[in-house]
Image (cartoon, rainbow, N blue to C red; front, side, top):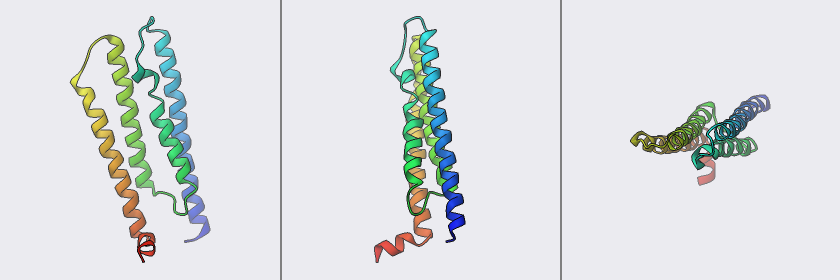
Length: 138
């Protein structure tokens, strides 16, 4: 593979990591503002909703240093998983602060986990299709 192609892939991975980290900062600010205007009622789900994109951004940043960075499809699936977890956390925080409960909040972790598994499968399939997995098995 040419160096310029690898550099373009790394640049795309770094751009995705920056987007995840910006989302983490936005959610941290959203949690702080929402907690300030909630008149002393707060939720762990709302306060720590920034942790999902932060962990995803750091994972993608770490993946940029690998010999073969993840493909665009894998990054998109991983970003969708991170967003699903974060939106579910914000929704759970809002519902908790409002003082009620909803059965629909149970779908966010399930869908996020499924997307995370699909993104891991996509990464493994990309490695095997590029021939890297065959080299390691020999």
